[in-house]
Length: 110
Image (cartoon, rainbow, N blue to C red; front, side):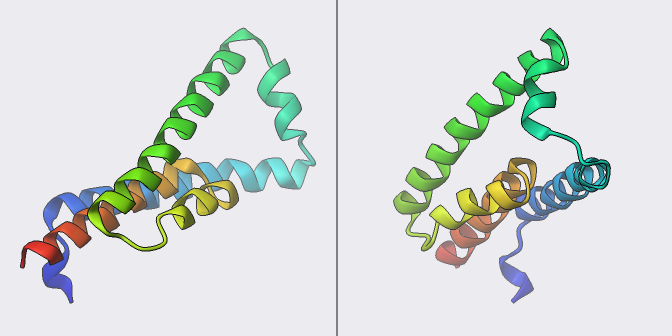
């Protein structure tokens, strides 16, 4: 089973774990404080709003890429990574997709 984990796939998987831990460390704190996520994203000043728009555009483009690329290489359930990103974080779902894509491609080549 581990023979399909190329070094690149492992790097992507490590980034996925980092994205999950990094975002949820803050999310759990915000939930505990009863923070208004959407309100904070758009009313915390121009810098935060800029980063919010930046990341939202990247997440939408990345979500389209996930669906198109999953279909192109023959991965099933590519849409699931987009759904996962809404429940966890795109910083987790996108590198996880890249890791699974790399693993899928390595398996196809073998």
